[in-house]
Image (tube, rainbow, N blue to C red; front, side, top):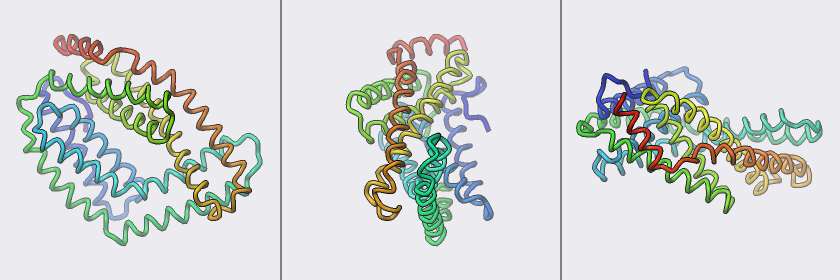
Length: 297
């Protein structure tokens, strides 16, 4: 499976192949009877994001109705698994924070919080199984796999890709500026989503301009990780704030809350220059350079 356009195929064929292969991979994971549920949920959501990134590149070649329907469909697939995935992310977040805790205090609060988070994760995974959610997703995604053949991307060319990449750059730059000028959980979360989409698009176009797109892929990957950790700690901090009694009470959580705030401040500080580097070039300038390389390729 190759998550990148090949020289031997047209743009439309390449985007259809990439999307089809991602869904084949997703269906294979979902049909495993003894697979790791936590890993399956993570990979299914990630595959959905990859398909949406390809879909964004193909947008100009799709009817407005088709694009809207497919984009919402794959977004909703992710939403159906979001509670289970978020529950696992919170366990990983508390573990990472504990690992970074050089002060050596608050061990009891870490243990208490982790115990409750594990209970919540296991309960949500059990609910996922009880509702037979994965089997429902198999049926839905099998239909989606068939629909890819009706996307009719035969006429799509570089100009359509150019539109998709330009839009990703433009929106990414805008939300990065907004996140740092008006910091909020929602703005930084939106920024992360735009970064991840650009990351996958750089992977799709990798062979066209490896000297530049390798760097873009690496930088957006790192930036996405930083913003992702900030998001996860934000969710954890909000949960502790809203339901302190569930985790031992506000007093016992004071040190942990302080560590979360300190780590998030550090992550955002580290992410800012990287984000400015990723989006330093104006979108139209970048795609004009990409077009010149595309023609040579």
